[in-house]
Image 1 (tube, rainbow, N blue to C red):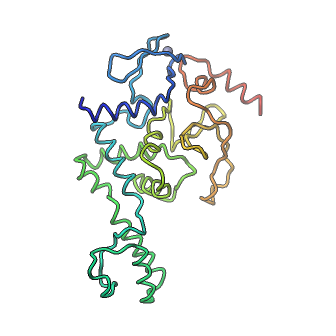
Image 2 (cartoon, rainbow, N blue to C red):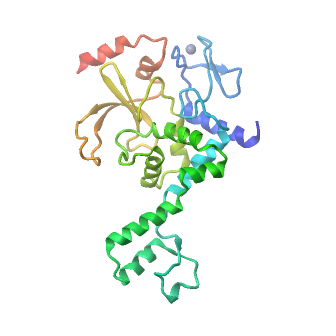
Image 3 (cartoon, protein in one colour):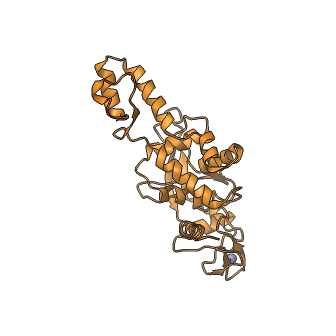
Length: 279
Ligand SMILES: [Zn+2]
């Protein structure tokens, strides 16, 4: 293991077990180092959990370091800054711009307006320029030397953690991630790493899970960190701007409720009945 790999693993361990460790079998909170590097072994039941277990990196088919850099690349390039000089100088630009190779999107739009190009056409041009700035899935696979299929599977895992109430208009998981990152252009890599490392036990679909009568989602609200919330569907799915669900209580990682829901050795029937009674 090289130094940068070690640093990445240390960082990821912080996101999975942020100052707190919780055994996903018995719910105990004390551990000792496991046999494998960065895994943790429960002091009570001796269950050993690897760092990647229950995260979006679980079952990764290429080196973790690569996955880390791919994500970094997506986060860095998804948002195209309209003020940066990124549009190649073309037919549209006048003599004043010929000394520069690139102009900003804002300048480009202004020039189009001067030439009385219809707004719809300008929009289309801008969209195509922005698409060209971002690496496609194919370009990413070539750049990182990962087969396109393998890359698509990794992207799907990432996408599966982006909850129902986020940009759903795109068909492809990759496009959806690009949109998601683009909308949250002020978010740094750690925001996405935390999303990927948040342990999700059991079967989840688009950051959402049903347990008994109750629904849960991996999401965030005001606070910067991701968490599981108990949710309630509001039934307003026709308008994508309105989240199709409302958040009820936050299920803090390693809280009593989290343990009852996700630790395999704990009887969760009792808790679910209790929830039903309180409604
Ligand atoms: Zn345990």
